[in-house]
Image (cartoon, rainbow, N blue to C red; front, side, top):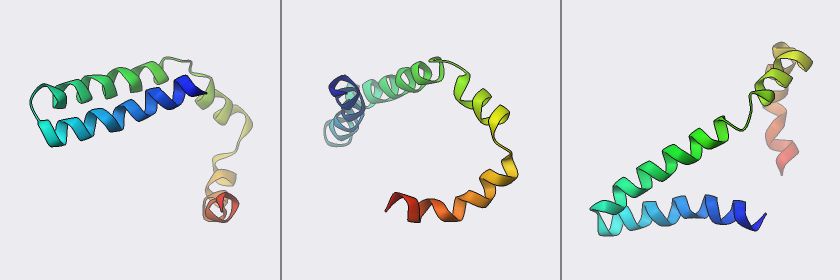
Length: 72
């Protein structure tokens, strides 16, 4: 869990450095975000496959208004 936290907070650090310092930090943030998103996309196609196989999208749409109350 610590590795995931560091990896996700690194995006914030690089974006702040890019906003404050400019230059190469902007490009570093862009490259890091791109690689991070690509890596998560390549973890496997199973989330979408599981969603399409086990859920009916009509049920999912009906669940959307309830989600904020489930989170809080």
